[in-house]
Image (cartoon, rainbow, N blue to C red):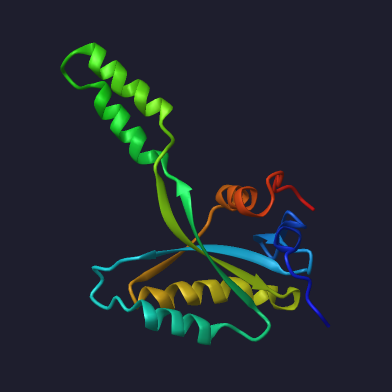
Length: 172
């Protein structure tokens, strides 16, 4: 059997969001349940060992499950919003403050790099998915890496940005 190449958006976002066993997930065209976790590294953690974290993650992955690592930049307006709020109260010439705030509105938001794991769980293993994700989070924590579930709104945004521009996240 030959897998079709170049069909990421159809494969991943085909079914929209579904719920089974109290879990919300993105349903793939192949019947897989797709869960997304953001990895956050803490280089100041006393046991920070990213290579060992990756090795442990890959060795813990059950046969038949898929894992994809997405490295990408995401608009991060929070820092700009905080700066704008602080700048609004600055003493000094109102014209200068107004020009600065106008510039902040016209400049695109800063970007931050994110590492997202996409976990593809076969339909028969959906009952094990929650426990596996909790186990992975605990396993990685010991290496100074946190695995945080990506909220559904951010999964929708991710799907829109890199998988399918018209993805609406609705039930498939």
